[in-house]
Structures are given as structure tokens and as C-alpha cells.
Image (cartoon, rainbow, N blue to C red; front, side, top):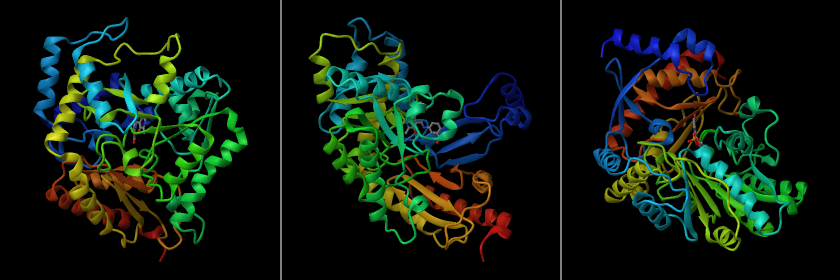
Length: 460
Ligand code: PXG
């Protein structure tokens, strides 16, 4: 495609398309910077023919990579057979039955039922309603409060946005829904005190849950909701002491645990679900994104037997659902995606190859003058950019240097995302040594270029 074709798409885009999470004034002035036209394996191509290594799996999503014919074929066949039918009014269809059974097999013990949606936000809304409905059924209707964390991202609907903690997500929906509280993130690099070990900090961050439960009254608390690893909040990986302590507190007060695995589900940590990786026992798991590797929207909420038993023991409707709950084409695509992951052993390969390769690659940059910390777990990684390595002092105007760095990555033909000045990566599970080498070269060059742009701001 030529430059003039790119201009054509950009101009038309500006006229009629409002993008998500965007400063519309500035986007209208500049136009979209890139037009992505194709994907194959770990790469995407823009409309000017540039090949780009996608270190973000689309948006934490394309775990099997792009262009897998098996998924396209399954969706095509299902579209011919039955493109749509609803699952309301006591009706079902084979793809939704098959996928529900498959998910029950892959999910942790006791999570045997699934309620489908089309986005992570929707399924978190399902979780919020179901958690509160559960406590009403149990005769404890006062239990409404769901505790979450300060930089949690749980989606963009008003309920999921209220459950999330990011202040900018609350800005347009004042007053945000009541009944949510937010505690400290388990983010050792950014939140620990001088000399505090990761282990001690992990316990302190977990203890914040107990403090909050006691502050609002245990009899009012319905659940704790958290991503096993905070993704959009900056790939915040909890210290080893955090999750065991959280599980203890959840058990002690008898509240429900909701694990939002929209990013961590389907192999990203080398287990089907990250709850398994951390040894936690959630009562509910939200999933989306990689369920179909993003080939078509599908999300869901996995629900444990305890909650399902409460539903079964009451002759009462749970008035909730979406037209596209259990969409047959999405279910067929998800089944093909999961089969592909199994056939090619993609999940165990994260442990034997992907995770150690990512950790090794990031470690090469830990001594770079711009880099305060590198960290990773499974196929999730982060590089902290700081003005002063020794004191962890950030740059003025958070996010500015991250964007400079992100643009250098892009010019090197590589995509990483900036969360303020934390550069994050979530490669597809299929990277080989070639892609890790390519990423390493791009990261090295982009960091050096960023350093020369901000050299005057770096501590000597
Ligand atoms: N939970 C988590 C943990 C997420 O990461 C959602 C819920 C909501 O999913 P939907 O499908 O409704 O978008 C997400 C979504 C980013 C970014 O910039 C991350 C997400 C969405 C958009 C942008 O990192 N995660």
C-alpha cells in the first residue's frame, strides 16, 4: 500500500471514528499515526509496508499470534452452520456446550460453570452483580462492598470502572458507583519504604486488605477483586509473600475472591490461569482477550460450586445476560484457539522457554542508566524508566519519557506500551529465539535514543 493510501485511511478515520481512551482534539489535529493492515505470526504490517514485531500481543490478547487458519476456519464453518442464536429462554447450541465443558476442564478445581459475555468489562459487571446476588441469597444482603486496588483496571463500563481504582477512570462517571474501596497496589518498586524487602512489603500490602475489611466492617464486605498481576496498571508483580497472605485474609473473613484474569488467563504465566501459578483459590475468575486470542470477542466468568449451589437452591431468577452471551461463532473460535494452544504445547512452553527468555532479555538492560528496575513473570515484563537509578526518582511530568521511549520502540519496528514511565511488554506465547533477539536489539537502541533525548535530566 502506498503513502497516499495511508493518507486516505487516516483522513477518513479522522472524520468518522472516535478512538478509545483518546484526546480527541489532538488526534483530530494529527490524525492516526499508523494504519495496521495485516498480521502473521508475531508480526503486524502497517499500510506503508513496515513489518513490526508486536511485543504487546495486540493488547495483551493474541496469545497464539496472528493469521492462524485453524481459528478462521472454525469461525467460517460455524458462520455457515449457525451464525447466531441466543442462549436465553432455555435454549442452547453445540459450540457453547462444548466450550463450557472445555473451560470447566481447564479451570482450577471447583470452578465448573461459566457465564459468557463479549468483553472483560461485561464479565466483571456479571461478577459484581453475581457476588451481591450471592450474599443476598445467603441471607447477608448487607455484604455489598467489593475491595479492589488503587491502580486496578477492571474495564470501562461504569460498574467495572468503579471497581477499578484508576482515578482517571472515575472522572467521567461521578458519582462512581458506591460500594467499592481501593487499597494499595502490591508494587514494591514504586511503593516500598527505604530498606523494606519485597517480602516485608508484600505482607504489608496484603495486610491493607485486612485493615480495610475492619475499617468498613467485615459484615459489609462481599469480596476482594484483583488481577493476579496488574497489567494495564504497569505489570505490577506482587512479591511472593502477597498472595498467600491475601488468601489467608479472604478465608479468615469468609469473603469471596474474584481473580480478574482478563490478561493473565490462557497461558500467560505458564499455567492456564494465573490463580494456579500463585496457588490461590478464587471463587470467580473473569476472562476475555486470549480466550479467542482476540480473533473475535468473547469473555466469561468462571464460577465455583459454592456460588452455583446458592443459585440452584433458590427458586429465583438471576436477571442478567447479554444478547451475545455464548455467541456460537465466538465459542467455535475459542475452542479452535484452545485446541491450538494444547496441540502446540504453548502453555508449558512458557515455562521451559518463553518466561526464562523474557527474563534473560530484560536483565540485559538492568544496568542501563535510564532503567530503575526490570521485572517479569511468565510472558509479562516491565522496564521502569527513572531519572535517578539510586534513589528511584522519577522524571518530571510522569508519562512524558515513556511516550518518547514508546515512539523510539515503534521507529525500531517494535511495540511496547508505556504506562506512565513504565515500559511494559506481553509478547505472544509463540516467540522464538529470533523474536527475543530482535526485541533485544530494538529495546537497546530505543533506550539509548531515549537516553540521549533526556540526558540533561538524568542524575550523574
Ligand atoms: N480486566 C482487565 C484486567 C483488563 O486488562 C478489562 C478487564 C476489560 O476488558 P475489555 O474487554 O472490556 O476491554 C481489561 C482490559 C491497556 C488496555 O492500555 C488494557 C485493557 C483494555 C484496554 C487498554 O493496557 N484491558
